Image: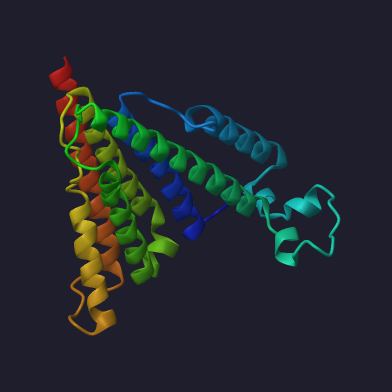
Length: 251
């Protein structure tokens, strides 16, 4: 989609990880994997196949930066704002993804709360935590992600790839813990994730000079970039050891 190293890419990552997190969260509390009307494994994959095919035929990602209305020959009408008529394909893709994400998330929350109330009535609660409370860690992590990128634009604009891998591994580790808790019928929903700690420290370190409280230990250049690669390596190590230990236990 030619989104580049920008907030659009971060929003896409947020939507992708939220979908997997919420559906795994749904399965933990209800015992059933319920996919939305537009789900990632089906319609999401088909959407990506269509995007890749069109990109191959058209010869590059720049195609997605054209106005969708003008490309389809849709005339400009007075009731349509200029910015809407000129919106490129990749921004319409974000709108489509946002609508689907909100619908599926609300659907999962409704499903979990309804099941939770039924189980509560029968006094057979699996977890001691309220389901909505257990979504808090996910949004806290993403608040840290947004703050860090806002405080360190050099990472957002020039070194996003290792950071995206790091954030993806944070989510993968959280989802993996939820799956294991579901399989082992653990009554405590896993809310902790050790991979979030470096990100929290980085936000505090970067916020110091902004509020005038303390100097940054990492600065805003070479050491900040090295820190991101270090976090990515930490993520590979922690998540890799988690997968290997679980696979060994299963065997």
